[in-house]
Amino acid sequence: MKVSNPFDLFLKRKVTTEPIRHAKRQWKRFNRNVSFSNTMLFLTVVFLFIPLFVITFYSFNKSKDTTFTGVSLIWYQKLFLNSGDLWNSLFKSFIIAFSSAFVATILGSLAAIGVHWYKFIGKSYIQTTSFLPMVLPEVIMGVSLLIFFNGIHMSLGLFTIFIAHTTFCLPFVYLMVSARIDEFDYSIIEASHDLGANEKQTLFYVIIPAIMPGIISGFMMSVTMSLEDYVITSLVSGPGSTTLPIYVYSMIRFGVSPVINSLSFVIILAICFMTILLRKGLKGFAASR
Image 1 (cartoon, rainbow, N blue to C red):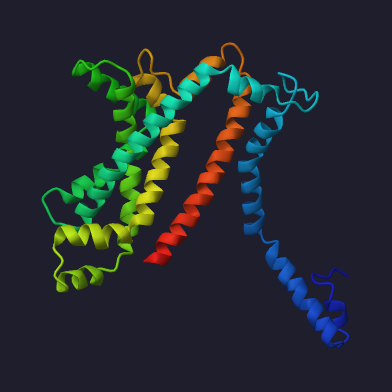
Image 2 (image 1 turned 45 degrees about the vertical axis):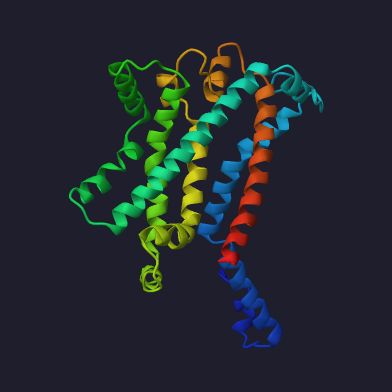
């Protein structure tokens, strides 16, 4: 006899003691915890984090290939002592990432505030076209920017990469800040006006602190997207403007060194540390408000 629940055998015999009822509740709770959604969530998380563990594992491998021959710190030694070009490309990537994210965050946040608070001609058109860089393929975006730079006779280099990264980061900041503004309580603005605050004071002391989580999220997203971009960067870069993705891709022709695994692990640790600090900072900021 097939039984979907093993405790039904006892229930059919009219055994309704408290231990049996408790066991049945535990069985239902177990079935609920191993649902299809939870299983898919677990598999997705494993799929996303396995590459990170693989990179970390091979960064301590003594051998250069994928054959594990023992634990060694030789690649970390080469990373910190014999990888000047690699650190130079990483430094350029960080400069472009943080500078472009900073400018994109300012412009995107002000654009989101202006579009949501003011009425003007072409408002719906601006809201629609602002998402184009998000849906356009990166190749089209990169070629368009390359044609534009050539049209105005601008030399390709770090500055053109900065402009390109600022351009494709803007819509993401605008989207995140707009999502935060949609949950905004407009009565706070009316209260600030009743207390005598002008528009400038309302903007800096009421609106921006209230949407600060969205602004910070947009900034961090912009930094991440700028650091990992290769397609657009390769099209608008010039001599002396090699960023980390371009440097790593150029190494594929000669074989990627395990030093990249060591650098990846260092970056993972740095990001985890920054995430913890940012989380505590946001909690402190929210508590102070």
